[in-house]
Length: 87
Length: 241
Image 1 (cartoon, rainbow over the protein chains, first blue to last red):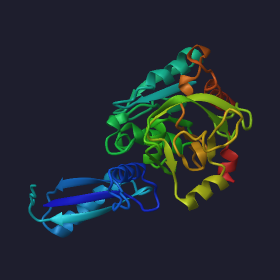
Image 2: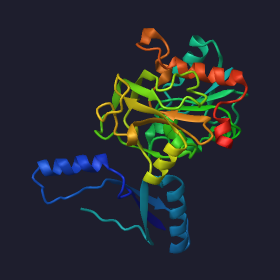
Image 3: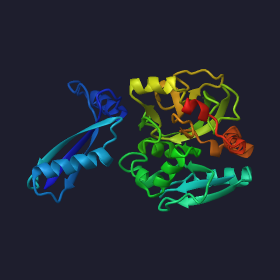
Image 4: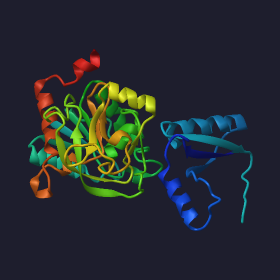
């Protein structure tokens, strides 16, 4: 079982890296990009028998280590089999 | 007095803190590796600066789970004085021993320079010997020192007089230009409600001898020695009131 965890700064928290990236995009002529928020992405391989168990385990480690609840929030996606997207 | 300087993989100001305690102030001092589970009878604990665990994930996020941190938590809960400097402060935040969190510096630059900080509270074990509103010139060296805390918790910090240091200009005034990293309310250091755990981003241990440009940090070490000599740590009354 695989879980994807997306950690982002809470909306109320200033993101200096996101701001720098959006400024760079504007200077490249991408005025249509109105805002950028930078975050972190984790892929967890889990020994879990159900997607409920996988979600619960992913959520526990996100609370304990992956995200800092003072400044960050997270979103979890559980996938049954590893999906590979190539470009 | 015995100082314990905790060493994490990636600590790099451990020797500076040890030198300040042992050589400059003539106290007993010992390094304690992060895998150890007791503090060897220390009277004061210092979590030093550096880049514990490479700053991976978030600064201090992994160090907070080191075995020694259980001993540090017990020591702090029993009222023992704990000082977190720079990365040590970040570890105290991640460990929940102090409130708030660190963000990247607002300009994304690593700042390595001398700054001025104003002592806002003189009833902590590490500021006892300071004059009220004393301005100290001590160095900073960090990329993530942009202190953040939610508005309601910031109010609680102010009400409880937990903001111990603010970045100021040479004249002792809080200005935006004097704030090197964008910290909320120009906060450079705070303490817990019991006042025995103090964390700050500037490095007092690197400012203990005039030969290195400033000896303004010495007063923080003198403070804790005086606090321990008194027998009761300052702030205990307020914390229990």
